[in-house]
Length: 441
Image 1 (cartoon, rainbow, N blue to C red):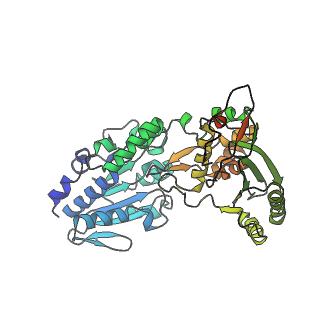
Image 2 (cartoon, one colour):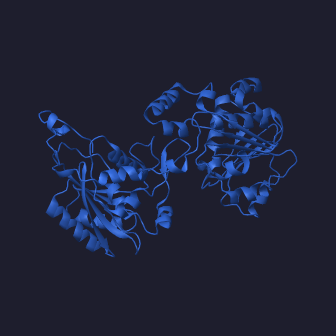
Image 3 (cartoon, rainbow, N blue to C red):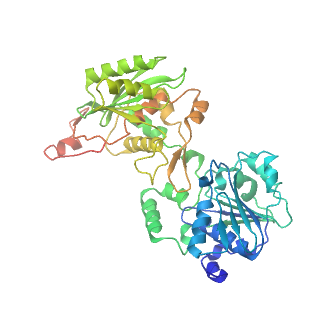
């Protein structure tokens, strides 16, 4: 395919990538804006016109699969660019000699990064993840006369490092352009429908995911304290919904092992064990199963949890226990980065539903549940900050919250009836007592 045809496939808002002589070209915005595709197409096009050394960079790159290597290969195949040769760790143009290389910045020190001194164009993908430390090493290294740094990013927070350093107050050598899905004439219809759905259901998420607005500090919390405090109010006296138990097992000496007991909309209580070995924890859990007959016990099998699971499995409780790995793939992979984010968001939905819910009044539980900050990855999927970050801020591990969210690991069939504290009013369950009602959670 000739260069003119390729140029026609690049949205007009990205034309400055090819025509502007700015040192920094900073593109940001929401999902569907086509930033990655336009950057890839523009670089491949420029690499056909002259010999360039192009470095494709990101904060962390554990393997070539983490880079934009695959995207560039796909675009080469799409345009049938036979002048490009795809090698295992780089891409080269057989006619001009242009070379694409791929690196992660976190692993680069001052000595290692010297290999980038001859770079003509550096493309930084997912700029919102780049730290000030990485930028301070990279910026003076891209020193060749006429060299450029291209940055594509979806803003995360108000104070993203590259945004604060480059885009908040751009100088004369910095081009800053915002591009969203409605600026991209090639945005697929399916993405537009997803954006419309998100706008109708959650305007705040729509503004961040699709319009490229950062998450304000007040909106960065996944669960609000108001929703938790509302659930503290005593309003449910009994529920015959199936008992579900969440078991968060201590990983380190100062963590607690916590059992959470929940029946439908009624989280009844927590039980805490301190400094127990796996056999003791398994024995205690066996006693709970035999005494209370839970329909499910969801166990965190990270750390020593796998040992507890193996003991219970060998004792014949395989039909009740379920092994849950917080870092595993989510059930809904298109919405959540991992199982942990999915469970926490299920718990948030439970706390904010229209029907009343109840949890034990507990200040530690309040702090645990409200401690988690949310983010989104480049695909718009929910991502939570790490447990280590939370532990550093709280001064302890959010064990009670983790036990609570484990009760939302998988849907449990529930047609139980909840009895609310009465004031003579008919509750919703009584209105439909003669009809078959099914609840997910």
